Length: 148
Image (cartoon, rainbow, N blue to C red; front, side):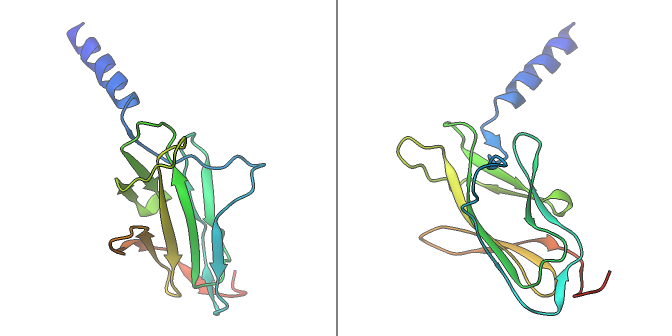
């Protein structure tokens, strides 16, 4: 019985954790992201996705995106008391930000630019007025345009 109470309390605590995946726009909402793609002969051989808090996935760059490519957007938390936002990039890994900004009446959010270079290296630059740090996230496979 004691173990059951410990497990229940742990699940309750984890469920109320202030760390969370970001909200993603609904399918009918226009995206406010700035997306730029290159014109090299290299393109992504697979999608680059981001996990959303509701279990959906946001495709930042679909397979076939010409490189280099960049995606800049604000990622909002789902609760007003969030202390960090977790960006989980599928199999590439996790980035956790505690540099949240809050507009009056709005949810905490972070602004970031995700880039993929011609070799498939994925990096994230988190918006911060004091410093700009480029963080490597991982690498995606690339292929020559027209190859499948």
